[in-house]
Amino acid sequence: MRRAWSLLTAAALAAAGFLAAGPPAAAADADLVRNGGFEAGLDGWSCSAGTGAAVTAPVHGGTSALRATPAGQDNARCSQTVAVKPDSAYTLAAWVQGAYVYLGASGTGTTDVSAWTQSPGAWKQLTTTFRTGPSTTSVTVYTHGWYGQPAHVTDDVTLVGPDPGGPGQPQPPAAPTGLTASATSSSSVLLNWTAVAGATSYTVHRDGAAPLPVTSASAAVNGLAASTTYTFRVSAANAAGESPQSGPVSVTTGSGGGGGGGLPAHALVGYLHTSFANGSGYVRMADVPASWDVINLAFGEPTSVTSGDIRFRLCPVAECPNVESPAEFKAAVRAKQAAGKKVLISIGGQNGQVQLPTTAARDTFVSSVAKIIDEYGLDGLDIDFEGHSLSLATGDTDFRNPTTPGIVNLISAVKTLKARYGPGFVLTMAPETFFVQLGYQFYGSGPWGGQDPRAGAYLPVIHALRDDLTLLHVQDYNSGPIMGLDNQYHSMGGADFHIAMTDMLLTGFPVAGNTARVFPALRPDQVAIGLPATANAGNGHTSPAEVTKALNCLTKKTDCGSYQTHGTWPGLRGLMTWSVNWDRFGGWEFSRNFDAYYGRTA
Image (cartoon, rainbow, N blue to C red; front, top):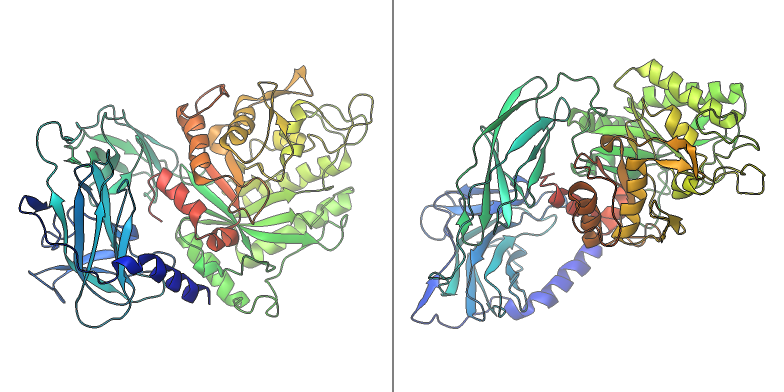
């Protein structure tokens, strides 16, 4: 029903352009599309996730055409940015074969347009028109199919209108300079270069690999082989064309063992609703897109609050009709791991209160968690203790030397699991701000009692395990206002909150204002920002534009607003979200924004 509604909605929005005939071109008009007949392969075109290819049959004209195949949540979009004149009329046209094939133009400066065809069969011409805005100098023309549909074919794409060439028009940018490379793990490299004036995008080139398009002057390249030397070059582009390539830089990846648990330089972490269903729907492990680098199985829960006995099961069929069998699930986990992904068991969650008040509960926790890890072949553990799982006993005032049994036993249990599974064990934590950043003002019940004993209660756990910790992704949502290092309160929902909260983790802070007890900064590669994927997923949803601002501030020191960070951290590991399921519900907006920011193709 949802797909049918989407198609009907798309039809209504595109009806004005459906198989419409445009006006004839003026005498001085020109066809501005580069390689619109695909005679030079995909030269000039960019297709999502390698979904497009030039083929020799069927064709409408010439000897080649574009064949593109939607896959999963990718609608096989192929696009090209074209230079145009401001305040001018243009006609976009193409010949297509297939059902639900779209042709459109975006960035027009007025009303973006599209046309589409419903039925497969013979070649059909799609045509639509638009007028550029008074300051528009480029538009993006595109074609794509629809989710769940078979491959479609496009040929003879044209954009006819005034030629923008001539004095004063945009010129291709200069070649990038200052290219540097550093190996961040055995499989990842981080590239940086000097931003080029007038460039709107860049392309990373590596011999034998597909070009990697990015939008900023840095790129994370993942999926590399260990102990291998790679050579990279970069080119810049704008609406007028592409620059020559930069000078080369070579880098050798590490030999493995360490490097942030084998994660890419910039990682996307998501929780997968594995044991329950809610309004976002069940997602099978095999259907989780490749964008997700760490998949946390939600949740392992205790048989009782203080038992330490953690159990995990797949969602019952009655609740999740499309749930896979245990054998299918385990096979999908192995497939994700073969693709370089990490799959963890997350313990706790909102409803799974976990307390380890005794050594017996501690030992049961270790054995039951290990049983889950072994049964499903998982890569490690995520600690998502919420609510009343962690609190500090009266008189426990020094995070460096905790005395509360539940805290001490949790630290011991995690160290035991780490020792059992070795250096490849991935350990992540997802505390709420109340248990971490609030510790800047309040810690436990305080020196005289009376405060909430949960305030800052994660700090001794994080501190004791910082050498074993792969990632800390504090939940920057479902939070009240929190005081930052500027001694001002910051509220969730915008870039400012994420900037201030993350700055505290990467700078360190005196606990409860005591300058003799400073919580040391974590490494940037140990920190990710936790956000809800959609407004339905939790309070404090942050728009993609605000997420981008937060990343820009923390990694480049731009778009910081009024808050002044205490450093710049290009090695910030990435983002976490609740959840994969809610991101699918929201059309994958969260993960696609992350991939676009870091120039990744999932």
